[in-house]
Amino acid sequence: MFSAIKRAFSTPDLRNKLMFTLAIVAIYRLGSFIPAPFVNYGNVQQCLNTGNTSTSGIYELVNLFSGGALLQLSIFALGIMPYITASIITQLLRVVIPRFETLYKEGQAGQAKLTQYTRYLTIGLGLLQSTTLIAVARQGALFGSNCTVPVFSDNSWWAISLMVITMTAGTGMIMWLAELVTERGIGNGMSLLIFASVAAGFPSSLGSIGVQRGPETLIGVIAVGVVIVLLVILVEQSQRRIPVQYAKRMVGKRTYGGQATYLPIKVNQAGVVPVIFASSLLYLPGLIAQFNGPDASGKIADWVIWINNNLTQGDQPLYMVMYFLMIIAFTYFYVSITFNPEEVSENMKSYGGFIPGIRAGRPTTEYLEYVLSRITLPGAVYLGIVALIPLIALTLLNANQNFPFGGTSILIIVGVGLETVKQISAQMQQRNYEGLLK
Image (tube, rainbow, N blue to C red; front, side, top):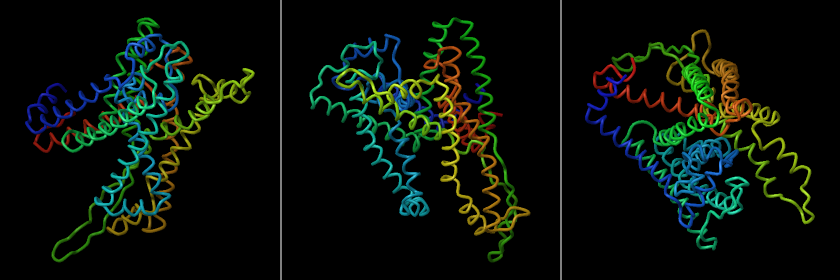
């Protein structure tokens, strides 16, 4: 492994790409610790050191994807989350708006237009999320009840506006850095920045478990983590290969087609998106309850109490059940809009391809739908179980905030890591090397 890495850095153009990628990641991590204007850095650190900081739902995801920059209230506080949300919305709009679907089918030019729409939407979501973040921080709800010191040195309207503009500009800069990595570096820039953010939290999380629960628990957590990583790698690499045969075609004096290949359908076809959907949707009841405080007599509404008792804490059975069921539902929904059996069948038919034993056209579409529905169920259950691992750790170890081997974090680490290694290996094999992994 180390010799393969040495060979990768000994190739000039590949070394330049790797060094460029590492430099961009370093800039991104540096920006995560630069506080936004009028943020009282000392008071923020005091709130973080109280040990009672808690984020939930969408803020937990933003803090995860920003590498802790959210709670630092830095210029990169929003991280990559606005772009992820914008990308998901753009994909969903392809189902609702025919124009978006037409652009997607137009090839590179149409997809470039969709990318531009995604950028505009990212800036809009950055404005919205930065405004909400600052409002929540001003109310003292971001760091928990024990933090009573003000986190902003100036609460005037122009100071708040400058903070919103700065955080939104930070989101735009992250998007630009990610696109630079995609063009000039190794792998997908957005995925690598998310990978760096998630991986940055692992040492502190493991250290906190060791301090709070002792070295025996830390060793047990690492052992469980290794097993979870191996199982996740196994499932992420698993796929159903549908054989496809292409008929021979004569074009002039040349013969095309005639080869046999396969159509791969992954067990986890939806990736981490259903987990993000479910977490975001489950956060909404708590957010609504948060803005409905006590009335004039100091009484809290019964429905607010019920939401706070059942839908805001991950160790509640109702929360776990709803989280699991919503992940399964969103997995089916997302797979249905990202993999179109009818479109795949038509593409196969137009190029003279067919599945052995299945007639082209409608029978092929029905067969693909049948296979997809059967393989989506274990993938959805797998996602639900992996997402529940931190909540189970909260119940058993009281370490939800520090348990790194589960949920979105492990899915991102494994998925992006595998994809990046594959790309490095492919580039090394183009230069007659063995590759990064044998």
